[in-house]
Length: 109
Image (cartoon, rainbow, N blue to C red; front, side, top):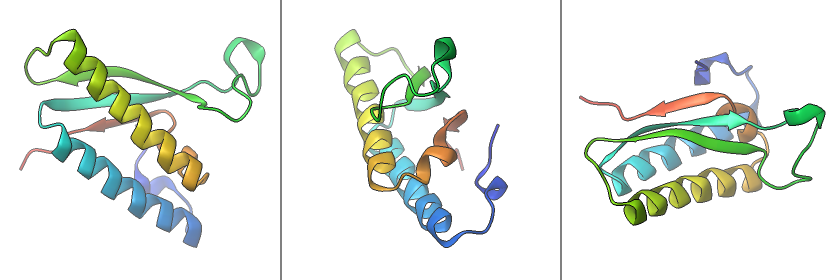
């Protein structure tokens, strides 16, 4: 599992990491039943270095919920996750390195 501490000191990466933390926190607040998800890297899939030519290079997997959701509710949450991650990566390409191959899980206090 990657952590934000694994990123080298870089001002752009620091900004991207801070934005990522805020966006993920907001996502979990907006979806109180969401427990976690994984962002899988698609680059290199089937030997293609860039299979999506600038579009999403990731896949959201292992989405888990605290209680069962209807198919429509699950789809809405998954769509929101993709939207949040896609928007962040589109605005700050440095964020791609922070999200790829990473598991995001709700923090309980």
